[in-house]
Length: 290
Ligand code: NAD
Image 1 (cartoon, protein in one colour):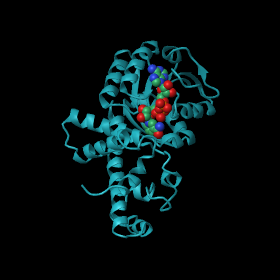
Image 2 (image 1 turned 90 degrees about the vertical axis):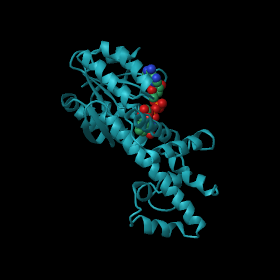
Image 3 (image 1 turned 45 degrees about the horizontal axis):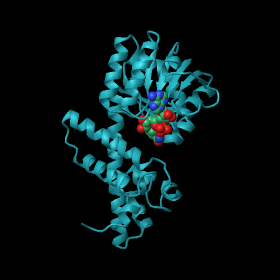
Image 4 (image 1 turned 30 degrees about the horizontal axis):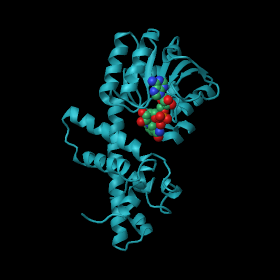
Protein backbone atom coordinates (compact mmCIF):
# COMPACT_ATOMS: atom_id res chain seq x y z
CA UNK A 1 0.00 0.00 0.00
CA UNK A 2 1.07 3.59 -0.54
CA UNK A 3 1.18 5.17 2.92
CA UNK A 4 1.82 8.72 4.17
CA UNK A 5 3.15 8.89 7.75
CA UNK A 6 3.25 12.15 9.71
CA UNK A 7 4.94 12.19 13.14
CA UNK A 8 7.85 9.76 13.34
CA UNK A 9 8.85 10.13 17.00
CA UNK A 10 9.27 7.43 19.65
CA UNK A 11 6.12 5.61 18.56
CA UNK A 12 5.74 6.62 14.90
CA UNK A 13 9.25 5.64 13.80
CA UNK A 14 9.04 1.95 14.79
CA UNK A 15 5.45 1.72 13.48
CA UNK A 16 6.53 3.09 10.09
CA UNK A 17 9.59 0.80 10.09
CA UNK A 18 7.32 -2.24 10.54
CA UNK A 19 5.17 -1.14 7.58
CA UNK A 20 8.30 -0.82 5.41
CA UNK A 21 9.47 -4.28 6.53
CA UNK A 22 6.16 -5.70 5.32
CA UNK A 23 6.75 -4.20 1.85
CA UNK A 24 4.56 -1.10 2.08
CA UNK A 25 5.69 2.10 0.41
CA UNK A 26 5.95 4.75 3.14
CA UNK A 27 6.52 8.49 2.67
CA UNK A 28 7.09 10.33 5.93
CA UNK A 29 7.15 13.84 7.34
CA UNK A 30 8.27 15.07 10.76
CA UNK A 31 9.23 18.60 11.84
CA UNK A 32 12.23 17.27 13.82
CA UNK A 33 12.72 13.51 13.88
CA UNK A 34 14.86 11.63 11.34
CA UNK A 35 13.24 9.13 8.97
CA UNK A 36 13.66 5.44 9.80
CA UNK A 37 15.42 3.28 7.16
CA UNK A 38 13.28 2.75 4.09
CA UNK A 39 10.91 5.70 4.69
CA UNK A 40 11.10 8.38 1.98
CA UNK A 41 11.26 11.90 3.41
CA UNK A 42 8.67 14.43 2.15
CA UNK A 43 9.07 18.20 2.52
CA UNK A 44 5.67 18.74 4.13
CA UNK A 45 2.77 16.84 5.65
CA UNK A 46 0.73 17.57 2.51
CA UNK A 47 3.48 16.14 0.29
CA UNK A 48 3.60 12.97 2.42
CA UNK A 49 -0.18 12.61 2.04
CA UNK A 50 -0.43 13.25 -1.71
CA UNK A 51 -1.35 10.06 -3.58
CA UNK A 52 -1.40 7.93 -0.41
CA UNK A 53 -4.18 5.37 0.12
CA UNK A 54 -3.81 5.70 3.90
CA UNK A 55 -2.28 8.59 5.85
CA UNK A 56 -1.22 7.73 9.40
CA UNK A 57 -0.54 10.45 11.99
CA UNK A 58 1.27 9.88 15.32
CA UNK A 59 1.46 13.33 16.95
CA UNK A 60 1.76 14.83 20.45
CA UNK A 61 -1.72 16.33 20.96
CA UNK A 62 -5.09 17.41 19.55
CA UNK A 63 -4.06 20.95 18.57
CA UNK A 64 -1.17 19.65 16.47
CA UNK A 65 -3.38 16.95 14.99
CA UNK A 66 -5.97 19.57 13.93
CA UNK A 67 -3.25 21.72 12.30
CA UNK A 68 -1.73 18.75 10.46
CA UNK A 69 -5.17 17.45 9.38
CA UNK A 70 -6.05 20.87 7.92
CA UNK A 71 -2.96 20.58 5.72
CA UNK A 72 -3.25 16.93 4.88
CA UNK A 73 -6.97 16.47 4.10
CA UNK A 74 -7.02 18.78 1.03
CA UNK A 75 -3.97 16.92 -0.34
CA UNK A 76 -5.60 13.48 -0.02
CA UNK A 77 -7.37 11.61 -2.81
CA UNK A 78 -11.09 10.92 -2.48
CA UNK A 79 -11.61 7.53 -0.83
CA UNK A 80 -8.27 7.59 0.95
CA UNK A 81 -8.29 7.21 4.76
CA UNK A 82 -6.75 9.47 7.40
CA UNK A 83 -5.89 7.27 10.38
CA UNK A 84 -4.79 9.11 13.52
CA UNK A 85 -3.01 6.89 16.04
CA UNK A 86 -2.11 9.69 18.51
CA UNK A 87 -3.81 9.99 21.90
CA UNK A 88 -5.90 13.18 21.68
CA UNK A 89 -9.14 14.62 23.08
CA UNK A 90 -12.38 13.13 21.80
CA UNK A 91 -13.50 16.52 20.48
CA UNK A 92 -10.44 16.94 18.22
CA UNK A 93 -10.87 13.39 16.91
CA UNK A 94 -14.51 14.12 16.00
CA UNK A 95 -13.68 17.51 14.44
CA UNK A 96 -10.99 15.99 12.21
CA UNK A 97 -13.35 13.17 11.19
CA UNK A 98 -16.04 15.69 10.21
CA UNK A 99 -13.57 17.72 8.11
CA UNK A 100 -12.35 14.54 6.41
CA UNK A 101 -15.89 13.39 5.66
CA UNK A 102 -16.75 16.78 4.15
CA UNK A 103 -13.77 16.37 1.81
CA UNK A 104 -14.73 12.83 0.78
CA UNK A 105 -11.92 11.29 2.79
CA UNK A 106 -12.35 8.49 5.37
CA UNK A 107 -11.17 9.04 8.93
CA UNK A 108 -10.33 6.81 11.89
CA UNK A 109 -9.22 7.63 15.41
CA UNK A 110 -7.04 4.69 16.36
CA UNK A 111 -5.05 5.33 19.54
CA UNK A 112 -2.82 2.55 20.76
CA UNK A 113 -1.82 0.79 23.89
CA UNK A 114 1.50 -1.07 24.18
CA UNK A 115 4.05 1.76 24.28
CA UNK A 116 7.36 1.97 22.47
CA UNK A 117 8.07 -1.73 23.13
CA UNK A 118 4.78 -2.71 21.48
CA UNK A 119 5.39 -0.33 18.58
CA UNK A 120 8.82 -1.88 17.92
CA UNK A 121 7.61 -5.46 18.27
CA UNK A 122 4.46 -4.85 16.18
CA UNK A 123 2.25 -5.91 19.08
CA UNK A 124 0.21 -2.74 19.70
CA UNK A 125 -3.51 -2.82 20.46
CA UNK A 126 -5.55 -0.36 18.36
CA UNK A 127 -8.84 1.06 19.66
CA UNK A 128 -10.62 2.38 16.63
CA UNK A 129 -13.45 4.82 16.00
CA UNK A 130 -14.89 5.62 12.57
CA UNK A 131 -16.85 4.00 9.73
CA UNK A 132 -16.61 0.29 9.02
CA UNK A 133 -15.39 0.78 5.43
CA UNK A 134 -12.38 2.80 6.59
CA UNK A 135 -11.68 0.27 9.34
CA UNK A 136 -11.67 -2.61 6.84
CA UNK A 137 -9.32 -0.69 4.56
CA UNK A 138 -6.75 0.01 7.29
CA UNK A 139 -7.13 -3.35 9.09
CA UNK A 140 -4.21 -5.01 7.20
CA UNK A 141 -1.95 -2.19 8.44
CA UNK A 142 -3.20 -2.58 12.02
CA UNK A 143 -2.30 -6.27 11.67
CA UNK A 144 1.29 -5.34 10.74
CA UNK A 145 1.75 -2.73 13.48
CA UNK A 146 -0.19 -4.54 16.17
CA UNK A 147 -1.68 -7.79 17.45
CA UNK A 148 -5.24 -6.58 17.95
CA UNK A 149 -7.54 -3.90 16.52
CA UNK A 150 -10.97 -3.38 18.07
CA UNK A 151 -13.57 -1.38 16.13
CA UNK A 152 -15.17 0.50 19.02
CA UNK A 153 -17.81 2.54 17.17
CA UNK A 154 -18.16 5.87 15.39
CA UNK A 155 -15.69 8.77 15.30
CA UNK A 156 -14.21 9.43 18.75
CA UNK A 157 -15.01 5.95 20.12
CA UNK A 158 -11.35 4.88 19.91
CA UNK A 159 -10.20 7.87 21.96
CA UNK A 160 -13.06 7.29 24.40
CA UNK A 161 -11.95 3.68 24.93
CA UNK A 162 -8.32 4.73 25.36
CA UNK A 163 -8.94 7.39 28.01
CA UNK A 164 -11.41 5.23 29.94
CA UNK A 165 -8.88 2.38 29.97
CA UNK A 166 -6.08 4.65 31.09
CA UNK A 167 -8.23 6.29 33.76
CA UNK A 168 -8.71 2.81 35.26
CA UNK A 169 -4.98 2.16 34.87
CA UNK A 170 -3.93 5.39 36.62
CA UNK A 171 -6.38 4.94 39.48
CA UNK A 172 -5.43 1.27 39.91
CA UNK A 173 -1.70 1.99 39.88
CA UNK A 174 -2.13 4.55 42.65
CA UNK A 175 -4.26 2.13 44.68
CA UNK A 176 -1.68 -0.65 44.25
CA UNK A 177 1.21 1.63 45.24
CA UNK A 178 -0.49 3.08 48.31
CA UNK A 179 -1.41 -0.43 49.42
CA UNK A 180 2.24 -1.56 49.14
CA UNK A 181 3.34 1.49 51.14
CA UNK A 182 0.74 0.72 53.80
CA UNK A 183 1.85 -2.93 53.87
CA UNK A 184 5.46 -1.76 54.45
CA UNK A 185 4.37 0.28 57.44
CA UNK A 186 2.38 -2.65 58.81
CA UNK A 187 5.48 -4.84 58.56
CA UNK A 188 4.01 -7.06 55.83
CA UNK A 189 6.61 -8.51 53.45
CA UNK A 190 6.14 -7.28 49.87
CA UNK A 191 6.51 -10.76 48.37
CA UNK A 192 3.80 -12.09 50.70
CA UNK A 193 1.61 -9.11 49.82
CA UNK A 194 2.08 -9.96 46.12
CA UNK A 195 1.45 -13.68 46.68
CA UNK A 196 -1.87 -12.92 48.39
CA UNK A 197 -3.18 -9.98 46.34
CA UNK A 198 -2.18 -11.36 42.91
CA UNK A 199 -4.44 -14.36 43.58
CA UNK A 200 -7.14 -12.54 45.56
CA UNK A 201 -9.86 -10.01 44.82
CA UNK A 202 -7.41 -7.06 44.88
CA UNK A 203 -5.59 -8.38 41.82
CA UNK A 204 -5.19 -6.15 38.78
CA UNK A 205 -2.92 -5.68 35.78
CA UNK A 206 -0.84 -3.21 37.79
CA UNK A 207 -0.22 -5.83 40.51
CA UNK A 208 -0.02 -9.01 38.44
CA UNK A 209 1.69 -7.87 35.22
CA UNK A 210 3.42 -4.59 36.07
CA UNK A 211 4.13 -4.88 39.78
CA UNK A 212 5.45 -1.52 41.09
CA UNK A 213 7.60 -3.21 43.79
CA UNK A 214 11.17 -4.05 42.68
CA UNK A 215 12.08 -7.73 42.78
CA UNK A 216 8.47 -8.80 43.17
CA UNK A 217 6.27 -10.33 40.45
CA UNK A 218 7.23 -10.39 36.76
CA UNK A 219 9.97 -8.11 35.42
CA UNK A 220 8.71 -4.52 35.22
CA UNK A 221 10.13 -0.95 35.15
CA UNK A 222 10.40 -1.19 38.96
CA UNK A 223 13.23 -3.67 38.35
CA UNK A 224 14.99 -1.16 36.13
CA UNK A 225 15.18 1.86 38.44
CA UNK A 226 11.67 2.94 37.31
CA UNK A 227 12.96 3.90 33.87
CA UNK A 228 9.86 4.01 31.59
CA UNK A 229 8.03 1.92 30.43
CA UNK A 230 5.12 4.26 30.46
CA UNK A 231 6.27 7.66 31.71
CA UNK A 232 4.39 9.44 34.50
CA UNK A 233 3.92 12.51 32.29
CA UNK A 234 2.18 10.40 29.62
CA UNK A 235 -0.14 8.99 32.28
CA UNK A 236 -0.82 12.58 33.39
CA UNK A 237 -1.65 13.55 29.80
CA UNK A 238 -4.17 10.71 29.51
CA UNK A 239 -5.73 11.42 32.92
CA UNK A 240 -6.18 15.07 31.95
CA UNK A 241 -7.83 13.98 28.70
CA UNK A 242 -10.19 11.78 30.71
CA UNK A 243 -11.10 14.75 32.94
CA UNK A 244 -11.58 17.03 29.91
CA UNK A 245 -13.90 14.41 28.41
CA UNK A 246 -15.74 13.89 31.71
CA UNK A 247 -16.35 17.61 31.98
CA UNK A 248 -17.68 17.79 28.41
CA UNK A 249 -19.98 14.80 29.00
CA UNK A 250 -21.06 15.83 32.55
CA UNK A 251 -19.74 12.56 34.00
CA UNK A 252 -18.88 12.26 37.70
CA UNK A 253 -15.35 10.76 37.92
CA UNK A 254 -14.00 11.48 41.43
CA UNK A 255 -11.30 8.78 41.36
CA UNK A 256 -10.08 9.85 37.94
CA UNK A 257 -10.00 13.46 39.10
CA UNK A 258 -7.92 12.61 42.16
CA UNK A 259 -5.57 10.43 40.08
CA UNK A 260 -5.03 13.35 37.68
CA UNK A 261 -4.24 15.62 40.64
CA UNK A 262 -1.79 13.16 42.19
CA UNK A 263 0.08 12.58 38.91
CA UNK A 264 0.17 16.36 38.31
CA UNK A 265 1.83 16.89 41.70
CA UNK A 266 4.20 13.99 41.07
CA UNK A 267 5.26 15.21 37.61
CA UNK A 268 5.21 18.97 38.11
CA UNK A 269 6.31 19.46 41.73
CA UNK A 270 8.16 16.31 42.69
CA UNK A 271 10.65 14.12 40.83
CA UNK A 272 8.17 12.18 38.72
CA UNK A 273 8.96 13.55 35.26
CA UNK A 274 10.91 10.99 33.25
CA UNK A 275 10.08 8.21 35.72
CA UNK A 276 7.79 5.29 35.00
CA UNK A 277 4.23 5.83 36.25
CA UNK A 278 4.75 2.99 38.75
CA UNK A 279 7.29 5.20 40.59
CA UNK A 280 4.26 6.30 42.62
CA UNK A 281 5.40 3.51 45.00
CA UNK A 282 8.70 5.14 46.08
CA UNK A 283 6.71 8.41 46.30
CA UNK A 284 4.24 6.94 48.80
CA UNK A 285 7.06 5.13 50.64
CA UNK A 286 8.56 8.47 51.62
CA UNK A 287 5.31 10.08 52.72
CA UNK A 288 3.38 10.31 55.94
CA UNK A 289 -0.30 10.75 56.69
CA UNK A 290 -1.80 14.22 56.47
P1 NAD B 1 7.04 11.94 20.29
O1 NAD B 1 7.08 13.29 20.84
O2 NAD B 1 8.24 11.05 20.41
O3 NAD B 1 6.63 11.99 18.73
C1 NAD B 1 5.82 12.97 18.15
C2 NAD B 1 6.49 13.41 16.86
O4 NAD B 1 5.64 14.34 16.20
C3 NAD B 1 7.84 14.11 17.08
O5 NAD B 1 8.85 13.45 16.35
C4 NAD B 1 7.60 15.53 16.58
O6 NAD B 1 8.74 16.11 15.97
C5 NAD B 1 6.48 15.30 15.59
N1 NAD B 1 5.71 16.50 15.28
C6 NAD B 1 5.26 17.46 16.13
N2 NAD B 1 4.55 18.41 15.46
C7 NAD B 1 4.57 18.02 14.17
C8 NAD B 1 4.01 18.60 12.99
N3 NAD B 1 3.28 19.72 13.03
N4 NAD B 1 4.23 17.96 11.82
C9 NAD B 1 4.95 16.81 11.77
N5 NAD B 1 5.50 16.22 12.86
C10 NAD B 1 5.30 16.83 14.04
O7 NAD B 1 5.77 11.22 20.97
P2 NAD B 1 5.42 9.65 20.99
O8 NAD B 1 5.90 9.07 22.28
O9 NAD B 1 5.82 9.04 19.70
O10 NAD B 1 3.83 9.72 21.12
C11 NAD B 1 3.00 10.02 20.00
C12 NAD B 1 1.55 9.85 20.41
O11 NAD B 1 1.34 8.51 20.85
C13 NAD B 1 1.12 10.76 21.55
O12 NAD B 1 -0.17 11.23 21.28
C14 NAD B 1 1.16 9.85 22.77
O13 NAD B 1 0.26 10.26 23.76
C15 NAD B 1 0.75 8.53 22.14
N6 NAD B 1 1.22 7.35 22.88
C16 NAD B 1 2.51 7.27 23.31
C17 NAD B 1 2.94 6.14 24.00
C18 NAD B 1 4.36 6.02 24.47
O14 NAD B 1 4.64 5.12 25.28
N7 NAD B 1 5.30 6.85 24.01
C19 NAD B 1 2.04 5.10 24.25
C20 NAD B 1 0.72 5.19 23.77
C21 NAD B 1 0.33 6.34 23.09
